[in-house]
Image (cartoon, rainbow, N blue to C red; front, side, top):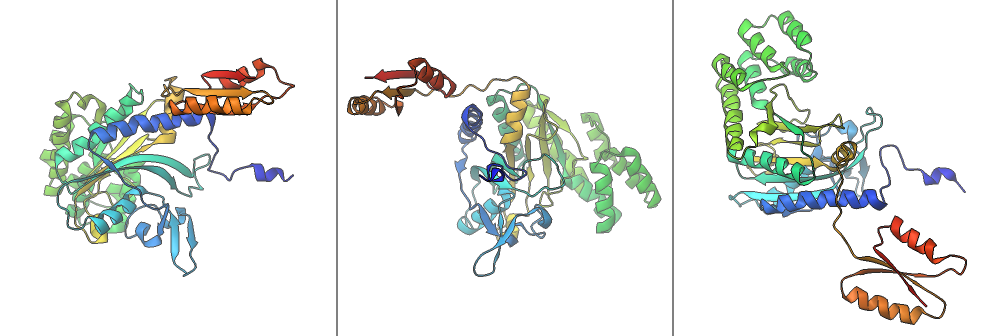
Length: 395
């Protein structure tokens, strides 16, 4: 036997038994919240044309995509990101629709992050897209949904960092910076390198007011008072509007007591370039990466021919499940009446009749012929290890 055939490639894994039941339960808990907010399921293909995720769209870099070709020579990719696919779908089937559209989804995404050792390349995601709504209320709804979703999964301690990409863009436009300089500044700020940011900006010979605004972004913690000061110091309407939007969203969340979960981080500058407004990530104990990501993407659907302001978020199920496990938060799996029916020689028809009767009552019945060499305790023990509620012996 070729032992190598038993192994999976790097970045993917098998899931079964209790772990899979718990993962499915996390998904059920989240989906219940999404549906209560009026979101309806949408399903897009596992692979799409390359152009749906190209550099122009602003999603995952091309080098990180799983690419292949069909018989006609078209370049196809396994879906690395649900949002562009749903944007394409919405533009195709809801082009004339003007009322807000609420979609939710679940499935696996594929990103070839070879530089991140130990990271999964196939991950399970669940999320929402709210299309045709430019309001602060829509942003607040997305954040409220994140908070309620995480609480529904059993998390009590978590924080959502919220930024706004327009603040950074406003400063860059006011300073008339070229794209290369913007990318360098973005890299310094994203790495939270305050001193590196200051040195780079000063070496560029930028105006002191511009330097001060960029330095303010680099702060690890930004209070409401800091935000008010940023409004006063901002020398462009785009940056002012960005801060005012964040304060408005927090005020909306405060009405439900959800503002305690929110902290501002204007240095959050996503590598995904289609974000145009708020950006947010949720963190908790036990995992270093975000368990939820999201933001506003008002220009994305325009790439597919439909101008529609939109906001969305994605729950990273694998990271979320890891966090729950490391925080010793038990996942209560919905009870199912699983029965193991073990029958002796010549008792098959009798057992089958009983099994079908129980199945008609909504119970799950597994039939298994008894091995003469095995005791009843053996089968009872097997049942307990495999989520079996009751073991019945028929002879």
